[in-house]
Image (tube, rainbow, N blue to C red; front, side):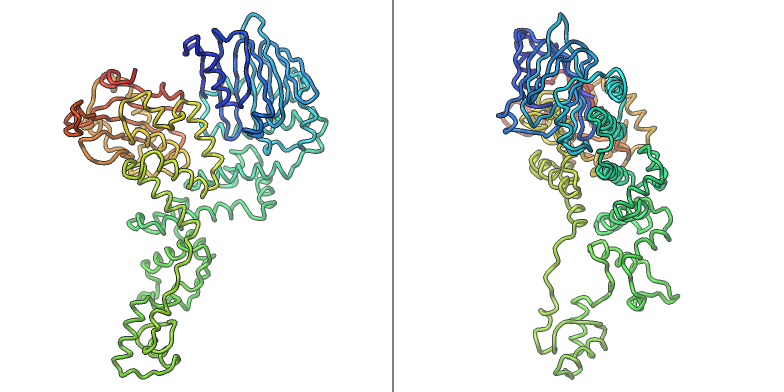
Length: 616
């Protein structure tokens, strides 16, 4: 949860800061106030996936959303506002709602509205739930009829929703990403029940829309936990507070089974790893176990079934004892992983070198064939099973080569993932933040995570880790000349949250917790790169290259995305002599340790050297 206060801003700049903050983090409106000389305000922001809970507390002000602002930008949201303290009024369309503490009102961002928070000798506080229009399973015509109407939150579904929002903000700092994802469903459900009751439209609830939304959330949950062997319908149903029977019913409407979906997603991950050259040192069994196939026999059955491999095609791959060689099995699995279509004949033809050898031996016998059919027999006689072409005297070799097929979606995702991990480790060589941003945009598109990535950028901006100059601009206000490795550390966190970051090693949960407890006291003294490595071991990910003289960032993490990454920012600048060599120190020195997901500047623990070099 993010908390921002005008008390941290000079008095003369507070009102402008508030106008800019609400336009960037909430929705653009025209704001006016009688307290512009010394405007007092604060806001708590709690993102819940695509949903946002905001609780501003401020002096009296008027906020107007005009048609011009709507044409410029419309996030298409429903806004449910609960007045916690103070009074206000809101007008939209032809309706006007006077509101006091405990009242609730609905309005939307796609039509002009006018509202005013009234000053009564103290700061007024409201809580607003921002809901995507597509997430609310009620007809829009019914919802628009309820806008700018006051509802009491003292009883019924409105009371449940109001107390839920209050407690959500109270417990916000203790909520992890997984908790917030589940609570988004609760927020949408409570809002839908309240709005349906307000519109007397309980029968109009679109069950099909609710099922589709829940199915999407379940699929995201499954994709994030594929590596857990205990992932089952029972654990999935428990995580979403539904029965196993209803879970099966949801996937029946999707024309698939929950077990089939888990199996298909796991196979897809195995296909990607088998096609990735970096995993050749791992056995097929190890790769299968990594994605939840604890039983090799079960993996073999699951992978072989859709491939429909005929027995007749494995004669030349059998060992003397009649068993299929493991080398061939991997070759076949890799071939399967490189294709989006079932592979029915994995040995459907010889390689080009084998065809050329067979043709050469055919020629050495005197060239017995003048037509296609005898030449085929010669090729088969000398080791080639199939070919394309006619006689050896014809240019048949060129006929056998075919244009490569377009890359499959699995190959594209695997390639983008590899490129992203390489760019995080060597950001300067790849083009810095611009390259990282492009790779994130492309991979998010390939993974159908454009909305989640946009929300992650918004969260970075709310934390203060992203501004008009990107991550680079935000980082420059905290640390001196960290260049690309510091920027890469911010993007590495986002990659870890989505399962895209590939670590060289991971810490156990106990080791990670121990490291978190020690870093503040340990960083109270100046440290060098050698001391960091000797104290905590090699990093999980090294950001910024391996040159021992230049600055870099060490990242330590577990295999759980819910655990924050611990970053050690190491610096070694250049003297003010106009040259870049030699650096100031014999090896990089530690400036700060960063850990946590709160306000960006609050996540740093500075060493004495870092405090001296911190930008003013």
